[in-house]
Length: 638
Ligand code: AMP
Image (cartoon, rainbow, N blue to C red; front, side, top):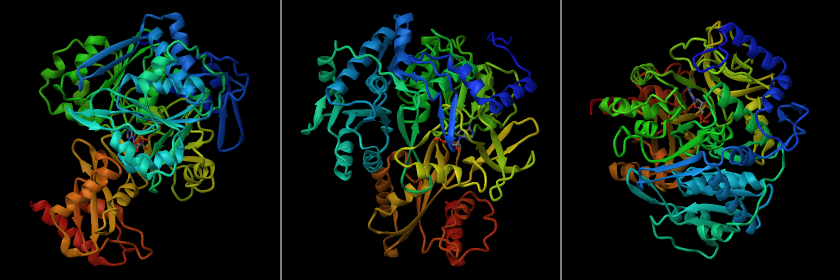
């Protein structure tokens, strides 16, 4: 037993357990399936008759909302379930499991009254308020498929998601708030609806009283509709395990975002198991993930994971440093938080502040801090470990997988931490490091693509929404010859299986833990009429990990200047959102390209980071590269 009362396997024993989970996946996962409630318990673990499509628990029937809410409302109705805190509006409200059930049922009835049924999509474009969680759980209750769009996305990104998901209903709010600044959502939504081809049946508006709402003919006051449905009984719908629970869009190498589709039963089991083996889940405990419901961490570890484990979850609207940099730790003290989950960027921000903001609070309830989303640098890791005095557990995963691929499963093993590595492959993930060109495994210590042999374990994406072909092509055909899922990350594995992540193999960048496609940003830059051509790369940033930098060729070079640069940055904010804004726009006479016309983004990135751009033998025209070098030298002198 270790200090948390769990079986503490030595490294070799954990490796045995991991091997068994790969060798006999059905056996392993059918055992884990007992962690959730089923209306019809599965007798089969896996249907893999159509690889790479994996259907977990094919004859099981269940409901995500019943597992997250009803079963705890029955057993511990008065326990806190959702603690909605906003330091933006200075409000805090705790909903017990009984109250969460009542709210979710009323929202489910409201959706039904609008004709939303099993398989219909509901798009949720919301700030971090309790209604967003009610809406998500209500969808799960009636078998509707939610697609949450991060509130920081602007109209162009929102329109693309509306068209792809074709929602019957959209749920939005009047406004969000960031660092005390009100951000009205309704004008962005109306603009997006003007751009999109798809028309939703209705738009449900939650009026927080932060910004005036311009009501359109299809808009309905959400709170009034929910009140009118307050006492309508809506039982959770029994759904096949493979029924899609949600779509979550993520960036790739093309301009078009991919709708990651998740199932119901596999997801519930994967989360329940992860709460036990990885995240210190304990019914009655409090979990605090500082992400946003618009991202995968928000889906898995603000909403579904903690609730499935019978924990209260903190939904936090606010920044890490406002009203002061002690706000996270004040919440830990106030709510006796057991486990916390954040991103390295937030820690790097806090590291710059007075240490008294951290030491001034009682953090004795905290058992561990989990970090993910981007590489955890060693100085930050050491600083936070020394300051908090609890284990800092890095976990590596992706929107696609829904839960960790690599970490040290502290509920299972005491295998030691190795600095710089998130840890070992998690049970169920057959992680292999392979040669990019041949698909053959590389020897320990050599760099390779981090790949996962099919079938992907429960909880991972089951396909791309409406596009099975893209799912197969993108993830399973980029590595030749084998049925391997590519993470599109480089890595290196040591003899014991500890894996170190070395960065992306594609043109995806990671800004403050948020994944952005450079292609998407380039498309936003080129919406400006003065722009002829553009390349965007991610360059190192002290706080955010990476930041986008744009290289722009103008139709009329004489227009180059600060004013135009600002206009281009605003075009990106308008199309995608403030999070994608380039930190600088550099005007160049031409982009460095290969003879076949491919932009040499890696070379641009290397030059901008002051590194050697490497092999440039494929370059078409050296003057373009020289111009970038000259710009860099000039910028470095400023
Ligand atoms: P997202 O789908 O937005 O969560 O982004 C996933 C990507 O973020 C991964 O493919 C990695 O490139 C990066 N990433 C996530 N977690 C980690 C981690 N713990 N260490 C290093 N990189 C990470």
